[in-house]
View 1 (cartoon, protein in one colour):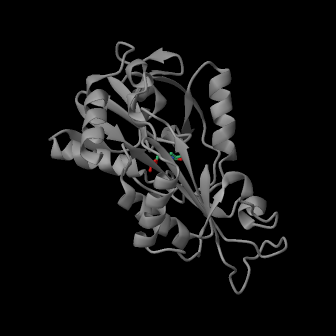
View 2 (cartoon, rainbow, N blue to C red; view 1 turned 30 degrees about the vertical axis):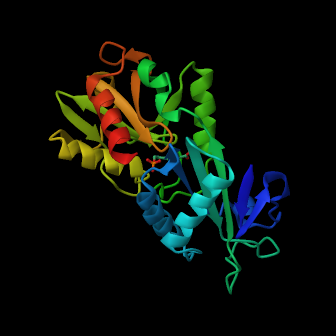
Length: 280
Ligand code: PDD
């Protein structure tokens, strides 16, 4: 792969970052993942807005304008011949040349990294026809989950726990209610109502989530933004997750309980189609 590092285009093996980079030592960085379908960036504008917000929340500037980010995204697709796949973007606070809890003052140049992941046919995965199994696990992340930081150890641990339990993914539960999935937003459908947790610092403000809500409302479907319990989800007609890369993905089992008839529900399937039709 040809990757992007601080304005340079390099073969991946030649892209090197300092051991003192705060992203490496402190997890002091933010990221975005944007899907690409048929060479088109999906929901790019939303990812740009959230990147800017994440940086601001951590007291960092944005190293590029939206137009510059767009040009970089386009160029990385071209250089790597990507039709379908993902673009990973990361911005860290940079390399102060030593380890110190305090941010470097004055600030040092940020470290900007982008790379691609080619995934031909990412929108046609058979998983969308079979659906996912999830388990619930306690929400043990910090309380600023609205910032898309690179601190992903707990979600990684939970992904491993889910796999060990024979499931595909985990939903986090805090004060009896589902916050979100390890790397996706959680949804249920009951009696025609589409339910997903309201925005707060308790969860990531998913870009796919926002678009799905918009398209659902345009299609006169009913949306309720509120928290729900695992028991409510288990008794729901349908469940699904949303994120860049999986778009809308049905969930057919939660903590061993079958959802609906155990196959992807019609609302989830419709939303998946809507999302893919409207964004690509
Ligand atoms: N994850 N919640 C969490 C904790 C996430 O990490 C993500 C995205 C989402 C969904 O957000 P969006 O719809 O904007 O992708 C929700 C990305 C895909 C990842 O970490 O790979």
